[in-house]
Length: 359
Image (cartoon, rainbow, N blue to C red):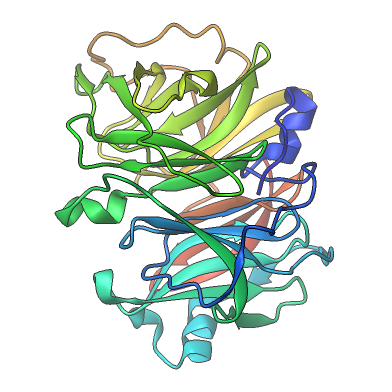
């Protein structure tokens, strides 16, 4: 899902880390066969149907040519109890299904899900495709064109599931957030595509205002890209909930850098997904959370916001936010087009897929 980032209006094409304006995906380094994905984690898209699948258990990332290149976008999406449809397709029950991530292929407008059939690290990984006509099918990982990038020094034990926490493709490079087994465990890796050698990544340090301390072991939970004063940046959110600005130019192999904490958005909370969009001539960040709902953040002052460097007493500080009170139970958020987002909503014991206007 990616494209060259341009400020303001052009940033719309980058939302959800898309790849609309990049040249065709290079598949020459791929091989034909079965992509041996062991766990279905984060998803991201590059140009022309190029899909990236994060596999935390194998500490690997797969680039897969989906062949899904024809634009099929057609109107809003609204499917009740989509988890039950998924379960029926896979011959199981919704209770035995985990939806790990959701991403829109910007080339076709079709929607992909990474799903675990079963629970825990032994769950069978599955990729599902929902076309814009509403047909749900399994995307087979057999007999596909793919390549694989192996991550060095992955987290071990309980941390293995956080080896890959988020991905985004920008200007020919895949950005990967997660944990390593090093002393400064929080990592951001920049992996050029086509895949060749994967380096150690950059260790990320942040000041967590709610905790009142510097942290080096907390992984980025979700991130997106945004251009500030002509420089590409990552806007990254962490548990409990600092929002941090990180220049991509500083992401160099083996380096240790410190991000700028531009907001503290509340304790006891995990950020889930975020998109950047433009409305009425202003840029906004929309971020879903597990306990604090969906937040809308005005980005007009993100470039000038002073970094938080002392303990926050009032729980929130820095850039202010507005809670979208009509958006409840959002567990997945992805940009559908310039004016709409796709949300997966947990409603009691089931999940519904809906299209919303970007607020």
